[in-house]
Length: 424
Image 1 (cartoon, helix red, strand yellow):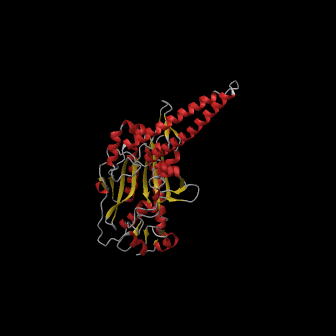
Image 2: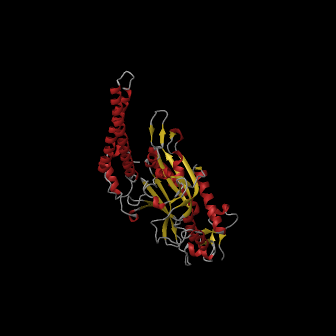
Image 3: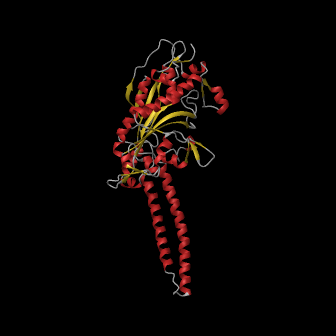
């Protein structure tokens, strides 16, 4: 939820920042609606005070005539009060709905642009090999070895699902274990196992609801939704809580299945592990002091870079422009890896600093017990990493001319002695 006081005190700046996102919402409209709400709230409070005052006038010493008059006046004000409360609540719901659908304000360092074409490459690591044989894409390689089974997946669930089999399933598990170990041992994130169904309030808190409900899967049970990312349960750990400032930063990591409708992806990556309704992902979440969130952002991207460096896969860091920035993010760096079968870099991780945007929406605050100050922390999240997508890159980068796929050196200890996938 945006701070209405900030909008009131910085209306021109608020409009300028939204304009960078190509959004036409104006502070004037918001402030007019908010003032209308305040006027109704003031009227409601005034009526409540009158009702209370009249109620105190009841006394056995009053005449029946005076008692009847007070009784009628109270009944009249009660009717007015109920109507005023109703209108006040409606005004509050309306202003909150508008504020909930306005994205986060962008950081000053975010490049201004309209689409992903305006994103900025800020770092490139690794050398792209050029094999002497014809490089194949992951679907062709894995289907040939009967490691990726779309016929069974379609029979079970329909399109945009897959079944991973045999040594590919083992590689998937090895990647999860390797990434969690790196996050916990090297970077001191706390490992968590979390529910993959969450309440609506959790999705409102992180920003998926109400604006992006079409991207989600809703269960017909207890107002529960399948999570699109572990960011949702992990960040909501401290929803409606006051955190002791001495415990910051808080860092969490978790592997979960993630579920997305891919409503806007018609015709894109229809076959393969790039864009599925269900996929596995290891997530990172940090909750920090506001003045330390950009340092935490560097630390988080460094964690992802460490994983990719150990896998020995070429990658690059891309700073997202204002037109490509996610709804809840104030600043985002995408990490893209080289996929030779597609002859291009593709995103496998996205690290975002949401500043106090999510904390405000979920009423998460911090208290400094030394000073008594209570304030909103900053939240950050990052993929570490989408397992299916990094599988693609490993399969395509480690394929051999004889049709086999070498297992990256760092994963061999996790692979039960398997050093190569597929038959020659």
